[in-house]
Image 1 (cartoon, rainbow, N blue to C red):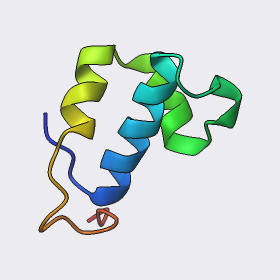
Image 2 (cartoon, rainbow, N blue to C red; image 1 turned 120 degrees about the vertical axis):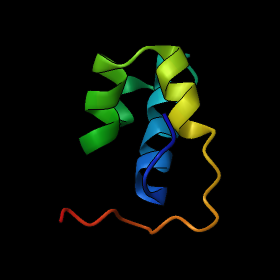
Image 3 (cartoon, helix red, strand yellow; image 1 turned 45 degrees about the horizontal axis):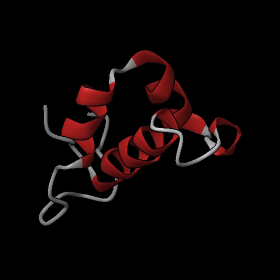
Image 4 (cartoon, rainbow, N blue to C red; image 1 turned 60 degrees about the horizontal axis):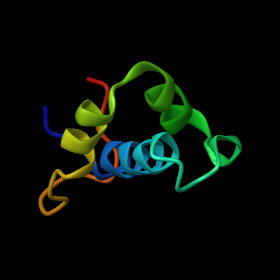
Length: 62
């Protein structure tokens, strides 16, 4: 499942880093914190590996 925005891709990268133990979980905030708890490493890899080119910074909620 590809990321829908650059912000989602960045949050997944932060969560993946914490899940792997490279970053302390206490450093996570917001979406990355809940992603780390609720998603598998494989799911986070898929989101984090999405190319940012052409993605909006934030996805509109319409």
